[in-house]
Length: 226
Image 1 (cartoon, rainbow, N blue to C red):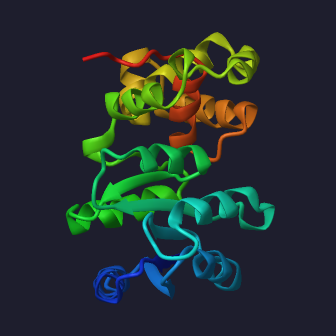
Image 2: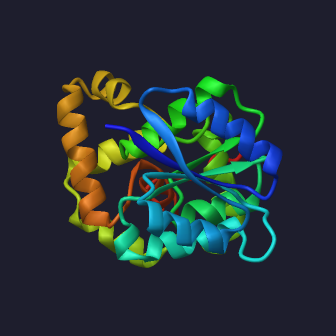
C-alpha cells in the first residue's frame, strides 16, 4: 500500500526538497503541495491524503488552524498530521498536538527520521521526534494551563480504563514503544497493542500522540520539574 503524502509549507524550495525525498521511497508518494493551511485542508480532501507534513507558521490560515480543521472533520478521519517546525521546543507544537496532530519533527531532522515519522503516522503509531519525547511535552503542557494542566473531564474518562490499560497509558506517555512496554510489563507486544487500541477507543484518541496529551492533561502522569 502506498502512503499518500501532502506537503504544506510556504517555502517552495523546502517543499521541493521534501518531494524529492518522499517520492524516492517505493512505499510513498507526494499527492499535492500547499502553501498555506486552507489549501492544505482542501487538498487533503481532494487527494485522500494519508499524512500531511504541516508547517506551523504559514501566511493566511496557519498550520495550527489547519490541523484543527482536519481533526474535526469526520471525512478526514484517516488523515494524520505531522508538524514540521524550526523550533521543537515551542508552545505552538503543544497546541498542535492538542488540536489533533500525530506528532512533530524539527526541520533539521535526518531524512530517515522524516520518512520513519511518515510511516509511523500512516500506521497510527505516531511518535514524537527523539528530541521531543518523554518530559518535553509534559513540561509545556504544565506551562500552558492552570492547576497543573489537569482536565477534570479527561480525568473522569480515565475511569473507563482497566488497570492494565492505565499502566500501558503511563508507559505510552513515557515515549516507550510497544516492544519496550511489553518487556517492562512482561506481556507480549500484541497484548500491548490491544491495550493501546482499547485505550484510544475509550478516550477518543486518534493515535498515540493524543494518548500522551490525555495522560498529562488528565493528571495520570505528572509533569517532571527539572
